[in-house]
Length: 327
Image (cartoon, rainbow, N blue to C red):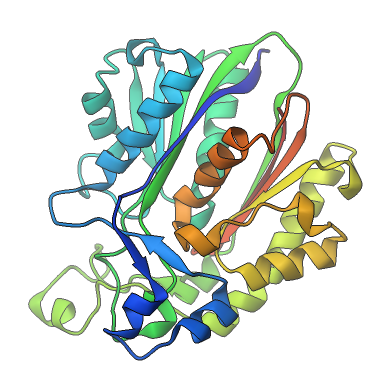
């Protein structure tokens, strides 16, 4: 079997920035309230209609391909993790494939909420390891700014728009993605969900008018689950690879809440200088948060060759996941 190594990264966010002070003007909240509970200071959002999730994914993907010195037609597969697809049909990945000109690539979406990028990375890892693909583009991309109820400050302040992407390629050199670990608990589906819009509750005027197509969250339940699931996911990845927490060079968690990340690091005995936090500048970009953070870490020199990089995420579903990478 070949090893699966990340050879290029990229991120793309809209130019428009909305600060907490901006939100103070349109809803019942304050900058202090948001900062204390989430660590968020600002978020990037699309400036107008006509910009789609695939556009953000393409922006990040082009940068990742450039960094990897790979032409789009060299891609064998494109996997896009998203909860906010352009359409219910076709997949956003197919639109990314068309916009990139990746004429030789298969394409499909993965929907696993905030854990989606690690689910997609796991898919790419296994496609490469089994020899089915040589080069795979993995993107996480979201536009949540037009899916939020701005009468609900518990959700509306949390999310931003953006995309991150990586290129995974087969190599004979040992290392790369060492393992991925994926979990779900569908009995807690309504802790974070969109009640209407699918086959169980098709969109109607009544459901739209009542806010059924907006994201809904049970914050306290999700917070408690996140603390536990983050730690479980990290421990599983370490034990599987025979590693200890002090061997980790950088921990890149899903950027859901700064307090959750800090509490998880304390629980694991991981010093904060080994933890990447950028939620203050991007808010929660769901499936895009980890690949955005990976690209920032690479560009800022926080990831070096042979570093052990640990990823972990949790999200709606409930889903949770982890991955260990030797860079």
